[in-house]
Length: 259
Image 1 (cartoon, rainbow, N blue to C red):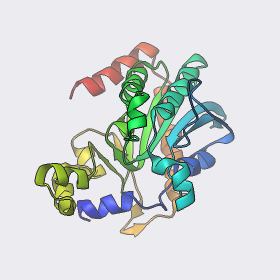
Image 2 (image 1 turned 60 degrees about the horizontal axis):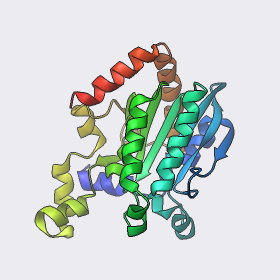
Image 3 (image 1 turned 45 degrees about the vertical axis):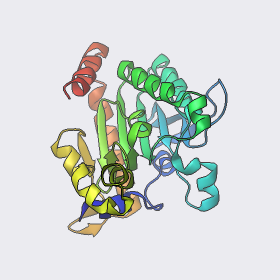
């Protein structure tokens, strides 16, 4: 499959969403709202639930599955309040020694004058700093689009995974083509050179694992994909829980500093 075909698959509204993953993994999930500073950003869904009979904090970016819902969720583009809500929940997770799972599907953070006015750059930077220092195990999964700072703000984790047909890049192929070749219609060619697919990023060791979406050339059902996410998250948190805080932080710092 060509890179731009994967880009198109990553953008499909039928992909597993943050809410669907939470519903599959967690029981007794309680969603938390607001950043305690200015607003509640509906593009970020987060809260606490039971996973494998243990408390877990889940924070994810949620797109809509129709026009009305997409408008409410701002098409999965979070602003400063969204990232500060995520930070609030991660600090709470650290306080109560809960592992953190982040779920990512965004074309990028909300790029608008009001977003800049309220400090989107600082909010993303603060999220990165916080995640680098969290004293609990963390896993990040890119479900669809992983666009720019809006994605990486939730992906500085002990393990970074991607679904097979997801993408992770500094900007969109259309944006890349517009900047480099002054023609967004060359997005397909841009995707070929950007190294944004899961297979390419695994080869470069930017990510740690790919969650399959197909088997023997046949697409897996959504339930099968969610079951695979469940199995891998369960296994990996059990492994990460064996590390001391010092070992966890050292390994996380080495993972990102080596690039």
